[in-house]
Image (cartoon, rainbow over all chains, first blue to last red; front, side):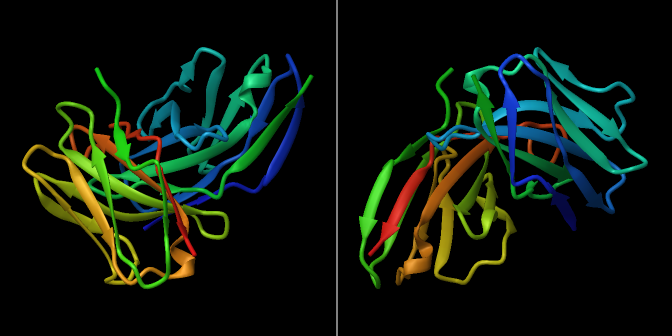
Length: 113
Length: 115
């Protein structure tokens, strides 16, 4: 079984500043994947970034980077140079082999002009 | 390539009725998963289908069922609707199935309101 914990229900960040969204996970799988999704108010889930459990380097995708600390079981999302369009719900998720994706409760990010 | 499509986008039903939601995955994707999203419970996994077979199932009552057709399109059905079934139902497709790193592509969702 897998469990994802996102302890920040809501976050504010000033436009152009960086922000870190926290995510910790618990899994008994040896191989697993960690994902971050963005959900705007329209409802659609948008894939942002992926980190594999065996990847030694932190994943980066444009302004998104994933701070992966395997020993601490954390997979924090860092958004650099925040934009107004980044205001949304952000979900951390995990997937083990042949298993369903498990989502955290999400963090609502609001970017302030 | 067209994305995941879900129909209808919005639905209003009354208690006791049944409803069928449809999901067409990305062309070539053969794995389809369904999720229920509510403010109280968050995103919860319903079931996953691959090659017309249900591979995984979440903790939902038997009123929730699904199926997948040979063209990978999937439907989910909820019978005897309850007020608590009001939610955003999301469908996601992926390929290949079972790999930890295969991203799921989500559709826009169907927002179901039960009155």
